[in-house]
Amino acid sequence: MKLMKIRKPVVGKMVVTAVIVIVAVAVYAVWGSRRSERVHVREMALAENPGLKGILELYQEDSLKYEAALFLIDNMAYYQGG
Image (cartoon, rainbow, N blue to C red):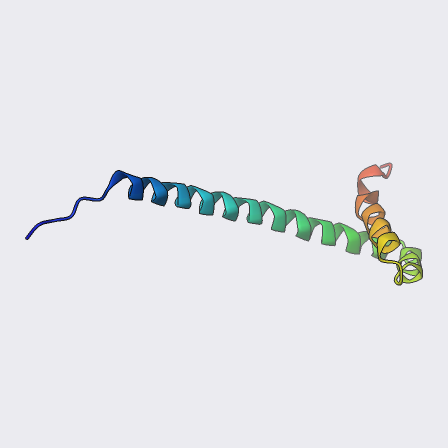
């Protein structure tokens, strides 16, 4: 019975595919943790400043202004004095 040898191009493709999968999983993990951190910061900011909910309600119909307000709220915590 003859054993088939694995050709080098096939092994190379498998290695490249494995590296791509590992990088994709790492990027997804980092992105997911930053997203959850951003949501946590937003919830804290809205809890500390109830008036911000009114701002979000005001711009709810205009998606661009709503996203801009969310961006500012998400980044508020990093610029507060302490």
